[in-house]
Image 1 (cartoon, rainbow, N blue to C red):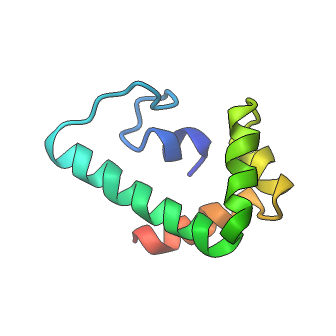
Image 2 (image 1 turned 90 degrees about the vertical axis):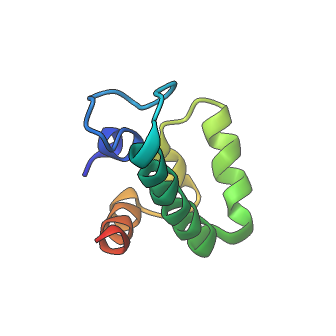
Length: 84
């Protein structure tokens, strides 16, 4: 799973920004987002604010994660495990 797949789980090849989900696809996207957010909260705690600030400045997600001490590969691996 790469960054595009995380942002666009339907496999449309884009970032998923502005994408519209309907019905079951919307429910799956929201459920996956909850899992991803819970991982970030558990690992980052109050540093989540720093991650969001980096993202707001335009940082790439994987680089912003590294900046707050979480490797993208570790985040991705935990997300994959939880979504099984």
